[in-house]
Image 1 (cartoon, rainbow, N blue to C red):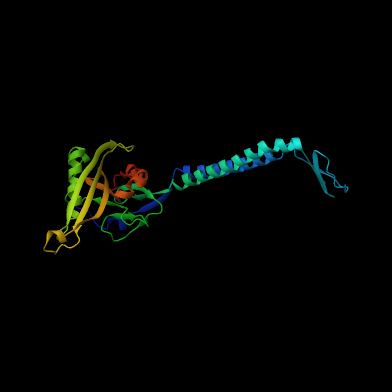
Image 2: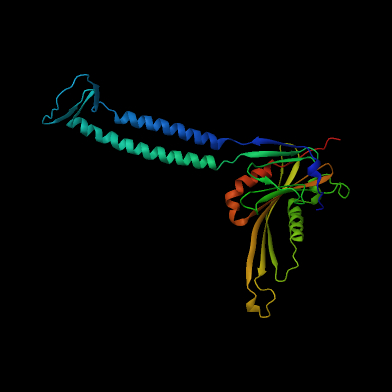
Length: 298
């Protein structure tokens, strides 16, 4: 696909905070539940058998046979043997409440951390939009129309490619053929871009899935997922084969969404290392599902 460079600089960009907020609500719910459990624990400890009463007069210290009492100028506390037995059960309940509240608060915190906030990127000039994790940063001068990447996992990124309006007259994404044929073209394009002149470099590729769907804007989109592995010799100039040990350079998952509007082919690309794909799959698919193309105002 021939891409158009630098159009995003002139485009009008609007960013809006987008997020389902489930993580925040779960975290706050866990805090409220923790407070309720602590209050219930306190109520369980203060029971009828354990009496606390005010006394403004000083009383002597007394220790009957079955009753232990302590008197002070401010208060008098009496604990009978029967109340001591009654205290044992609520104490176990209190410990259970403490442990339960700790576990629930940790679960709520974990759920809150697993629900990232998304931003929406809108390019009205070029005619497309998508959502992306808000902690991803934009990289300028990367060659694509727009480019974002994860600040910690540098191999995890997204970009948008647009075909040149002078050399393409697409009417529908179906001009690429069925999704399976489109998947082959996408994979071929990736392999062409990753072509290397180094000795001993070998690429293995596989189309994992292809699909099509009509989004809420009424347009048809194709989705393609491929895997590409790159192998290289650690000593490509070695004469003896046993000295040329093949090693895995990288193993990545590539996800593409294809759409057509304004007689142009739009492609949202996502790249992620294969070893973190399972962890990031939900968020990556959300980005894919959010991709939309739109008509450019004339």
